Image 1: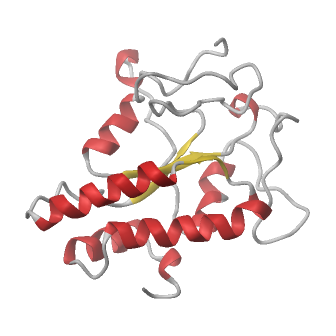
Image 2: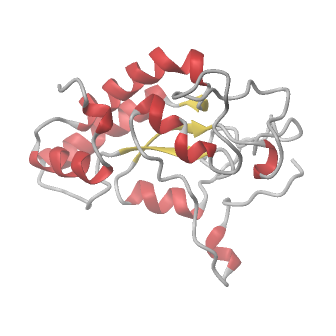
Length: 192
């Protein structure tokens, strides 16, 4: 496994998994180790889903071994912003009022990513309700490039966790759509 693996683009990782230069289990394991090493300083993730991610990676590798390739997201680990529902994992939206909210179903975008073979490695940190400062209940994420600074508002989950895990986040959520039913779980209400 290359030392600079965490700097590969999503498409590079996808292609290398498809070619079997490395397995999904190897990349997920490497990123989980990197998250464990840097998370205490950076606080980029509210929830790391290590066991689930490794099980999904094994499943993706087994499918590839049978000649089944779902496409460019097959076996690729991603982070999901804490504003977007992942079944069985708290979606707090960075708020205290929603700290115990655990959705029963994936948001539409998460379901689509999973069906495409993506591996959800964790839920990324964010400002309170994606509009305010960080809630005092959650430790403010650190800036990997300048100690004492934070990564900004609204988009810190797009910048911070990929520094910890090595990947640009694909956690931006769905583009605005007219049909609200298609966005289930992407913008949870601020009541539990």
